[in-house]
Image (cartoon, rainbow, N blue to C red; front, side, top):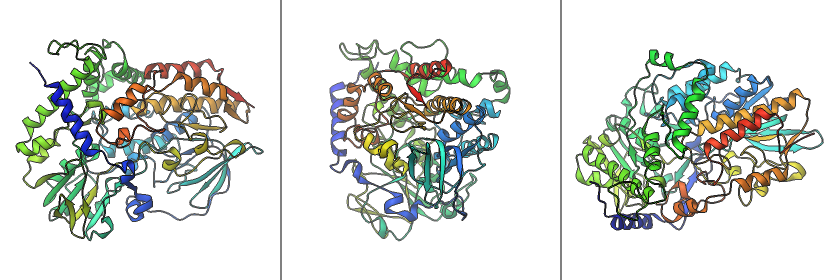
Length: 596
């Protein structure tokens, strides 16, 4: 029988939250590209010099991650073939180009996470695909749809400016390119700008260091999934215990002479249960339209008010959603163990966290380490992680958890990392500190689009993002966004959102091209109406800010801010959002847009 001391647990939550709150908030991090440019270099693909491009294309797709690849694919399917992808990396893939650290995998089932599986005829090999497999699938999409043609790689857009007279966009890049495009489409790079913890003394470290999104296999050895043999005589520090470290630590645990894992806040680690996909089983389920059916079933299981009768994915995500949904929600708990008056959401949250704590106790042999690995916060406060070997890695005698009591490392010296006055001498420091998430979009993408009448996007969005359908922005004609903000939020499968948005963008552009329409722009009234419809859930925002331990979800405790990816909108929910987009596309009336 589960009988938690709820006041005591909430008291622990508050104490853990308080000691992690810092006055510098998100300023505690620095960007690789600004402060440590040598760490931002591409270690995977050699940059090839070329002449600047001066031409015109129908569509410029900025970014070759999932958003750009799906948009390019849908444009090609719709008959718009004059498409150019511009990408800062050396190949397609976006996050999956950069994230090649050992152990990297998706944490949403590959059958619904990898886009365009049915169109490319590909069956993932595992339930949760490795980063290598996902990157290769990105390349598969690019080849299948001929998206490498006209593509510009190792190229960063620096200026995007609308020319009202010519009715086209001018695109300028860091390689001297200056070309025009009738239409532009881009995402907002929610996982594209790597950050470092602003630990004093980084520049003094005499050993080797790198960020996990720039994994240095020349130093560690074996980029093909084998043992990291070069580390066998190395003492290695990894800073961070978020989703990246949860995947990388098991790979490092048996490779290094010694591994020091520096923890600010422990992750909630749920079972992954990865397994191979059986080709015979896949052949039975992969009938026409199979991936859309699976996508919609997963979305329904994650967001529906009542549990659907069928759960095709049936994993830890959908099990957790079902637990929270069937608990009684914001009303009194339906759990027979719950005290009177306790809400269903709170009791289900505490029960699940208790299960995760029990899993730690059952796995980690050292009691002190086990206690330090236990998360003390509400489950929605941080992105839950999934792994079957992370906890057991701390049973390896040469793996040491260095808990920083919520403060992070004190400083880095010439020889190592200092925590609470103790210096841990290491040969290598690996930063598993993730990416910028909730900062201003113009900061993440690296340019500030200039729309009609010289208006800058940063100025138009000074008080927060405004769109229609999360795609169209008034005053920025022929420009389209493929991203989740101001649309369907708080949904674990972001790739599904990108698929729906990309299809919508391709439908509008194809219509304009086929009809000889020069300019497409959303009206201010339509944008106003949409933003009225998707008003922010202030209760959720208050919960993340007031009840959650600091982290990237709540801008390190400073509140969600104007550009948070974790806003929750009162309407529409995910499935309603998808239905709105599909009905809007299918009607072919394009209500809210002006064509001229």
